[in-house]
Structures are given as C-alpha cells and as structure tokens.
Image 1 (cartoon, rainbow, N blue to C red):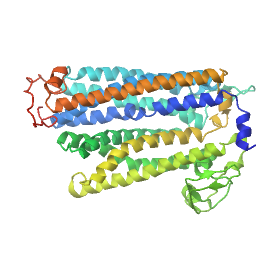
Image 2 (image 1 turned 120 degrees about the vertical axis):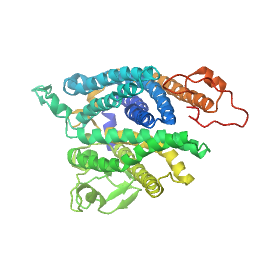
Image 3 (image 1 turned 180 degrees about the horizontal axis):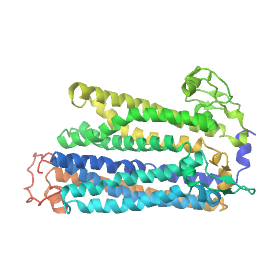
Length: 488
C-alpha cells in the first residue's frame, strides 16, 4: 500500500466530505470576491470622471455598474454567510482551540461587511436624490470598507499559514495572546497586497472583457470604448505590479513555509542546483513524471544563485507533508497561475505600447479577443492562488500546530455528504439567479440604448442620473440606432 493510502487510512471518515464541502463553498464564493473588493473603486473612478468632465456616458456606466455591484453584494451575502457558518460547523477543533488567537480577523471582516452594506444602500439611494459631489464623496468610503474586509480575512488566513502571537501552556492550549502579533504575522503583508492587487486586476479584466465582447460584435461606440478603457487600464497598470508581488510572496513562502514551497515546486530532496519543473506529476518515490525540466532554475529563482539550497518534501515525515497528489495539485495550480500572469503581462504591454504610440486602443481584433478571455483567465488565477495557499499547507490547518484531521467535526460522513448535496443545490440556484438577473439587466440596458419606449417606461436608466428627467423621446424608427448615452 502506498504512503498516501496509509495516510488516508489514518484519517477520520468525515474528513473527505468536510474538505470537499469547504472547497466547493470557497471556490464558489471566491469568484464573487474580486467584484466585492474592487468594483466599488472602479465604479467610483468612472463616477469621478463623469462628474469632473461632465461626461454623461461615464455617469451612465457608473450608475449601471453600481447596480451590478448591489446585486453582487446581495449574492455575496449568501455565499459568505454559508462560508462563515462552515468554519464553526466543519472545523470546531480549530475554532474552539484557536478562536481567541486569530478570531479578531473574522470580527474585522464582519464589521466591514455591515459598513459596506450601509454604504452601498446610501450610494444607490443617492442617485438623483443627492447633490452630485455629495453623492460621490459618500461613496468614497465604499472601497475602503472593502479593503478593510480583505484585511480581516487575510489576517486570519495568514495567521493559519504562519501562526504566532501566543504561547502554549502545559496542556497545549494557547495563552498570553498578543493580538498585534496574531494579526501582523510574517505572511500577512505579502498575502494582503498580493490578494488585493489580484482582486483589482481581476475585476478590471472581467469588466473590460464584457465590453471587449461588445466591441468584437460591432458595438464600437463611445459607451463601449469608455466601458472597456477605464477598467482595462486599471488592470493593465496593476498586472506588472502583481508579477513583482507574486515573486515576493513565493520568496516569502520559500523562507517561512519551506515544505509548501517544496510542494509548489515538486522538490523532493533538500539540495542545491535544484531544477524547475513546468507542470509534471510527483510520484510516491519522489520522482517527477512528465513536465518540462529546466536545470538549476528553481535554486536561481529562490535565491538568485544555483547554490541556493532548497528544502525538499522528504526532509519531514510523510505525516507532516502534502501527499504526492496534493503536491501535484499545488504545483499545477501554481504553474497555471504563473503562466496566466505572464501572458497577461504581454497583453498589458501590447495595450501600453499602442497607447504610448497612438494614444488609442489597439486595432487588432486579436487584442480584443485576448482581452475578452483575460477576464475568465483572471478568475482562474484567483482560484489557483487559493488552491496553492490551502492545498500546499496540508496536512496542517494551522501550520505546524494543528492538522486538518484534528480540527474536523465529529459529525458523521453521511450527514456531511448530505449537507454537501444541499449546499451544491442551493449554490446552483443562487448563482444561476445571479446570472439571470445580470442578463435581464443587460437586456434592459440594450433596450434603453436602442431608444425602446418600453425600456423608458420601465425605469430611469435612459435619462440623466442628476437633474430633472427629460421628456420621453419618440421610439426610434426601424433601422435607427441611438448611441448609448447620446440622449444625455
């Protein structure tokens, strides 16, 4: 029997369904997080442009994005609440023993959530009811509360990766808790900035991708040009920044979580002149099957010299390291994230080159095809980053202090699989409803842009956000097309 099979045989039966349930919930929720963290900033950026330049198209975009932001927030409440409940239900061992040490991060996230809910309500209410600049300034705290929420969550997660701020008594329970040390752990800074920038560039690419699709379908008006340019510029500026931050966090993991680094790079034996593997699969005997081997590169990337010693997985007992399968999953997630990030840099450079030469968007359809794909690719990198962080830490739920199997609930496996099925069903319905609402909003906005009388009768989206509403215009005749925002 293999080493992995021995390890699995020693784990409680409820561990697998608990892991799968948590993984599914996190993977679903994290797709919404970039919009919760970054869409308020992008919306306010467009809002500011609309006010400063008296640009009605920018105001229309800002207003529509704020509506998407509200719908996303409502869905995020559901998925985030389920996630919070699962921490206590699935991992009572961790929350019961360590909650006093790292629980403040969840508290901060909770307060940020309530503040964000209030501010979103005020911001949505303020359209047409507040003075323009008063409305804008009341929205400015929104991105700050989003960053505050990210602060709380990353503080908790970075503590799980590099726990500190406590001492253990004779029974092994944490005492003498230092809240400051528990929040500002060695991995907090690298994780926080890497996460925040990832959220901003992902939201930028996703929003720009929507308008890139419209551009490819022939909607080359100012509405689509502006809707593409602003979020894509934000994402393009942050992409090289993210590359530097990604390199920094990988280097921090090399120093502070060497076994996780070994899993991400498929390093079995501690050695110098360690090769880099692009993809490939780790075997139980420590060999790597498949992939592209580049001699000495891993040591060079880790310490800028081939003489850099890299700690291998075999330096610790099998029970204290990821299995070969877990290491391979971590490695693939890391390589996919790095590969997509490198391609996005090329896309950002393409955009920057054209803008620097002509002060205009690239003319190539291939650029817009790539831009449309960039949104989906960015979401995949977010998922891969999470997988690298969580799977690479196995078998520890609190690094080198508590194994996942020690924290799992005593609830029977059958009950957990049932719960898993219910959560999947609920999430499919919730996320399907979210998509349906977005498509409904898109249809309504298209009708409004086309001058449809029905759309004008249904809502206020076709007139100016501020000031008196204009008289409804006559329905556009056959073949007549009114540019978005041209009536503003």
